[in-house]
Length: 180
Image (tube, rainbow, N blue to C red; front, side, top):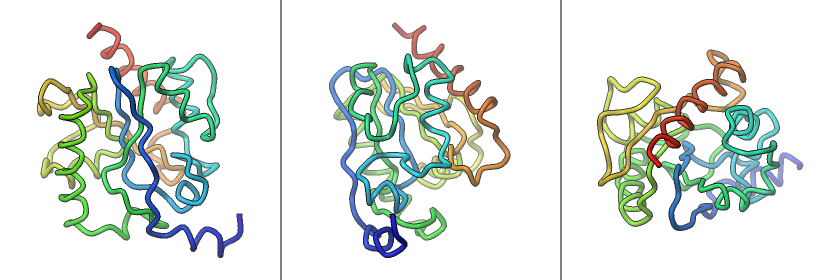
């Protein structure tokens, strides 16, 4: 993908991967330019979402971003806090996060997944005004949907290795399985 092709994807919207009866609706911060250019969530090669999803036991094999539709068969889905694609999350305004949180809440009330898993605790804090949120299960719910803040799977998040990220995703998977 050329730099011009990536830049042409700026501000594009990427459709959610959703269905009925989701166990977990994963929520990214916003689509990156590679995701917007391909139409596949978490498409940047250094992103650890797909490896962490498999290593944690959510999927029987590592899926390629182009296979994202298969997630629904596993009771999983993907959306974003902010729909607009950008090169970096720091290009988003506080207002975009707040509005994204409002839209996300409406989406969760409509879809009713058992868990909403926000991949990026900073995005969760900004979207829902919870400045003290930490990684893990949250006390807040949206209707009957429980919320879990996950580490951001971006390769830029050096505080988390793939192994520690998979461990946290695994904690969520166990909680989701315990819920039925």
